[in-house]
Length: 251
Image 1 (cartoon, rainbow, N blue to C red):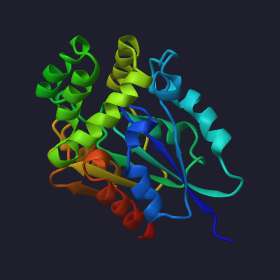
Image 2: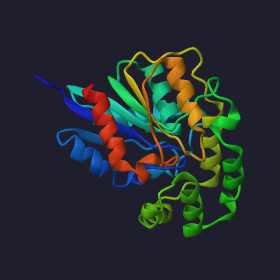
Image 3: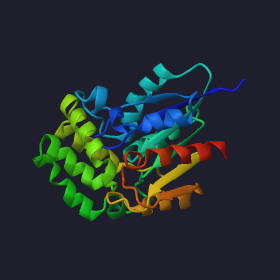
């Protein structure tokens, strides 16, 4: 009997499950019989009022509780993880190698594999330094201008992100705690034992595409690049991402 596919989705820095937007609709249409379970990083989403752990390992321990609650008795579990979410997924595989059968990492980076100026492009750092001084819709617009490239979806994404910020704001302290956890993460000599697939944006203006290329080279992992999308690739081109995941799983 074929096991039901179950996708666990992990977002990135100061983002939550609602930021997946209509990507979830595209993923569900691509895998109509699959179960989708987005899991929030502590300090965001359902847990925006709790302190975010200062390490990626600590994040895994908290998030795995939601995984265990959602886990089916018999399932084919895959993760889809963006940016900081990708670091969490790698640490998760390291600590609990039997939880998943494979996964997709999107626009992520790893300390010890890529230099800091690739993991956070200097121009992006200067851009982000303005965020603490912005409020409400202006703040979300500023972030969107950095992480997305497709203007045709900007307005729709801004409306969604602004509503999320109003309902479940991520505190400045939790933003710093997540940034510290991401900046200090190192996978060491760990090589993931599961089938992995890398998706990257050639024109990512926040995290250099060289980070994904370096991971692919070190781990001998297939990589596909989107020629026009930004760091938040599932916002720029959700259908392309869903289609590439389907191709990877079927192959």
